Each structure stands twice: as C-alpha cells, then as structure tokens.
Length: 314
Image 1 (tube, helix red, strand yellow):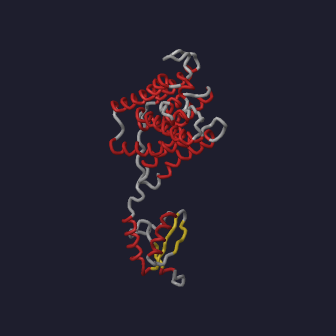
Image 2 (cartoon, rainbow, N blue to C red; image 1 turned 90 degrees about the horizontal axis):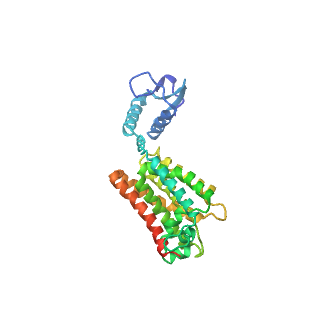
Image 3 (cartoon, rainbow, N blue to C red; image 1 turned 120 degrees about the horizontal axis):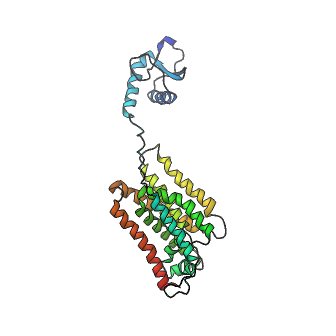
C-alpha cells in the first residue's frame, strides 16, 4: 500500500457501506473485506478503533472499493445458511425402558432350568450363542439369538446402562419400530461378518454388536441431516467419537471381548443410518400404524429365531 500518501488522502470505509461516518468493523468483517480489496488490487490499511476496526483506502479508490464490497456482500448474503432446525424427538422413553426390562427378564429366565420343546432343561447359551462354525453351516438364528444372551449380570448391566443411552436416543429420533428393527439388522449383519472371519470354534453372546450398530446409525443420521450446512457438519463427528471411545473402553480389552463383532456392528450401522435418514427426509417418520408394524416385525424376528433354535438347534 502507498504509505507515502498523506493521511487526508485515506478515506474510511463505513461498516454498512452507507454514506455515513459509522466506520467500526468487527475483526471478522475487517479480514473479509481486506481480502476482497486485496483481490481487486485496491490499497488498504486497517486501524484499531476502540472495540472495533477501521478500514481505510485511498480517496480516489473509495468509490471502487465500496462498489466491490457491495457486490461481495450481495453475492454472499445469507451465507453460510443457518443450521437446520433440530428434528423434534418423540417421547417414547417408557416403551424403550420396558423393552430393556424385558431383556433383563429374559436373562433371568435363562438362569432357571426350564423344560421346553424337548430340551430337558433348555441350555439357552448352547442353543443361541454366535457359534461361528454352526452359523456358517446354516444355523442362521444364532445371528439373532446371540444378541439376547449375556454371560453374567455385569455383562447385562453394562449393555443396559450404556446401550440404553444410544438406543433410547435412536428410538426417540426414528420411533421405536424402525429403531429396533435397524438394531436387529445391524447386530445380525455384524455377527454374520464376524462369524465368516473368525475361527469356526469362535463363540460369542451379547447385545454389544447391536449397541455399536446404534452408535453407527446415529452417526450416519447426523452426517446426512447436516450435510448441507458447513457449520453443522462437525456434529456428526460426536457419535463417531463416542463409538471410538466405546471401542477403546469396552470393545477392545479383555479376553472375552469380541472386538470384531463390535466393530462390524458399528460399520453396518453407518449405511443403515444413511438409508433411514434419507427415507425420513423423503417420506417422514412412519405413522403409528407403520411404527406398530415394524415393532411387531422386530418381535417376530427375535421370537422366530428362538423358535428355530428350540426346534432345530443343537
């Protein structure tokens, strides 16, 4: 900039590009405007004025500078766009809590010696665990029944407390029916890929695969929902960070930890979440009838898997 010019030859730019002596700019506005002037080869200098800034240009370039800045402001008006309004959550926490209680009741049932369908007594773990070799041999029901089994009450309590947070949020976001159906599918697919990659003797139980699926679904929903807004895109990283934190804290330590099932549940949750959010954007959340239908389908899948285990398992 031509510092040899006399001070009176420098004229301040008004903060609102009006014919006004009001010339205080914010630091961000000063930086943006100075870049515009720099790109148009217009000399400028900045001075601090109290809590704001002042941009000055040579007097003979004031009209040009104002014109270029008006054009810049016009082209960038309304950008970046405001973040989309958050989707209102559905208050169905009571339903979710009752489902989690049902899982705890089923665990208590597995501790008792029950005679059922020719089994004296029923060995729930032997019939329903994710035995890799038997799954690959055709016992598909183990992909689902394993999600309902737990090794001990600490295992159960951990899944209910930690998983309950993510599952409850997912149910409030999508409604209970689609949420539970997606959880089952992510857990099923995670167990299937894990069985395919593991040693045939590998066995596993627990809802953790579906819980990590819930985290993946939530991450994908946020990623799709805020994809058009730069300021909100970082929001989808929160569920990703939560998943990695859970993997580090719960999913990657201990000899009884099935890291593969956890990881695959999360990975399968991502495309399921993308598909779910795109469908909600196009058609909206399912109504009460469709929600009830999807919830019924989830129950039928789980009970059907256990029926198959009791009839054909061994």
